[in-house]
Image (cartoon, rainbow, N blue to C red; front, side):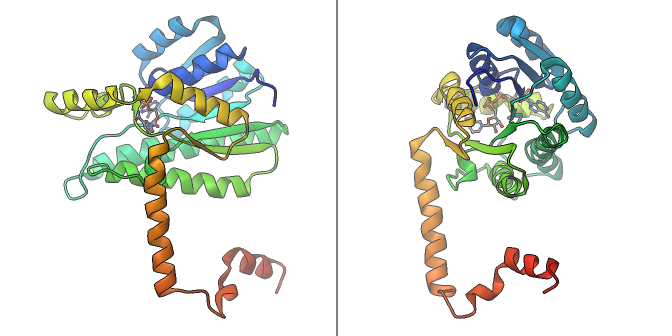
Length: 282
Ligand SMILES: NC(=O)c1ccc[n+]([C@@H]2O[C@H](COP(=O)([O-])OP(=O)(O)OC[C@H]3O[C@@H](n4cnc5c(N)ncnc54)[C@H](O)[C@@H]3O)[C@@H](O)[C@H]2O)c1
């Protein structure tokens, strides 16, 4: 890939999405930013200038995603990269969380990312064009956890799982990346308020304070863009998140060693191979 690429960025009106768009433009590309927040979109359009077009879209709505994909190919002609980045997070402890909060986080983060990936991958395949989808996961995708974020953590694990299977299913012309940042300084703390749910001032203040301690959004976004351009599968930004990934692996390793050590029947249960055997009539 050369470095001048066009991109679509969902959740592109603020935070890391806006900085991903800026990074693409600095490299000579054009962007379509999509977001459900039209005020932020208008502000971002002014900020980014002529190389950006905008589209109001709620990524949890299938119709909005199809409209977005059509507009992207009309406006940009070549869509090289798609950042499925729109997301929201608010703390919702497991036993206090409501089904509405669950649907909101999964509908946006998981269903929205899947529908975005599907819409663009289908078009790249139909057109025999190269493209790459970069999902925004999180350090939460890897096992670096904190209390209160169970719903959100589930969504970011789901994104990693979905992307992992997608990369196996795709033909060579469609690449898949997962960007896994840790704490980044954005307006993410206001997700709950933005989604129209009640939020108390104290929680907003604490959230703002926490986010302000994060990595600059431009730095994290640059890593995402550069990683996607390099064709990386996983894109990491925060070395500290490795602690969670290592602790997760140690638990898995320990459980395997004690409960399911390598055994004589192991090779009998490789699902992918069994499926191949069945489809070959075996
Ligand atoms: N900030 C962090 O510490 C952090 C860490 C890891 C991962 N992330 C992920 O980064 C991504 C971007 O978040 P951010 O930190 O830049 O926050 P942000 O709130 O600044 O940006 C998120 C954007 O997504 C938009 N959005 C929300 N729901 C949408 C929907 N249904 N349809 C379309 N747009 C929608 C918002 O309006 C907003 O502009 C998210 O996926 C988030 O989960 C953030």
